[in-house]
Length: 461
Ligand code: BG6
Image (cartoon, rainbow, N blue to C red):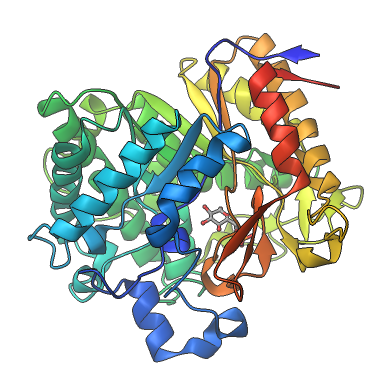
């Protein structure tokens, strides 16, 4: 039996655009996802768009009751910016009533809300002004954050500004998976920088208002493991780490950008446009805690072709490496490597002043999960997911024993939900959702297992 610290948070995470539904009603204006779907639904797997997702907008009262039934004592979701501020300035009263009632229901069911402000859902009104490319987005986000702190501060003790900000940078400006789906390394760096400044200004507002509770950010980190010990491979891992992990973690926790990253960007004429006072704002507005999403490691090797001239893509610095001995989640095509969670725990302890942190997402996506439905119990028998969580929790526990200050573990996700261009392909929930049967929720076997884990605060091994 592995015992976890007293008061440990056990839970699951989702986001507004992936779970609420009512994407274009109740006063909400479109996001880039809604617009993109309107422009080209064929981009989305099986043409499944963001309109309905898991219908939590209508079902949150019942859903809040389902959470403790799988042992959740905490739940992360996000506020939809375009729902709260449909034009960027005017507060939507329906959104206020909805979120207040939603968060109250969580409290009634003894589920601690962790509320995030941005999960890839850029309002269309801001995208039309340039989105994260434009400095205007920094002020717009800071205003939105302040509005949310004022309206819901009495119901929320733990706030986070962004979920996985590197994702909207990479997927929107390098790899084509998010709108505007362009390829421009320089713009990607500017988008990343403006995002960090938006985060910083939101934290600044939080501090100046003397808001109660704590504020953090959620990052998807994975240690960058190099193929081998050659200088080229080691440099590739270092540069991947600078661009993907330290770029956000250092300013958020340590209050400064890594000098090696600044030098690398300078050499390649990729430095973003900054404003006077930015550096000081970053240094004085660090976070209280960090949320880390971990699914699989990043393995890299030196690029096949030596860089000639200036870099135009991250692949000029590192190339992906497929470890031949890897263990796979064959249902999603991702590597399973729980040991990385111990390394993450040690990284937080040794490189980030032992800042308190929690696992804000970890989980196993499974395509066509209905194949594991057991007719007798009516439950999906997701033993593979139990095994996945178990292996990761063992490593996490090892990290906690070694002194890392991890205070919780949240899986992705509570009920099966919609996932961007992937639609409903990969199922992750403790509850199965039947899209063609009024979004009926049915607990999976992992829900029962998680309940026992949470209630005993102990992992059976
Ligand atoms: C996480 C994101 O990284 O991965 C979620 O925060 C996303 O928004 C989840 O849904 C699962 O992704 P996928 O591609 O397996 O559906």
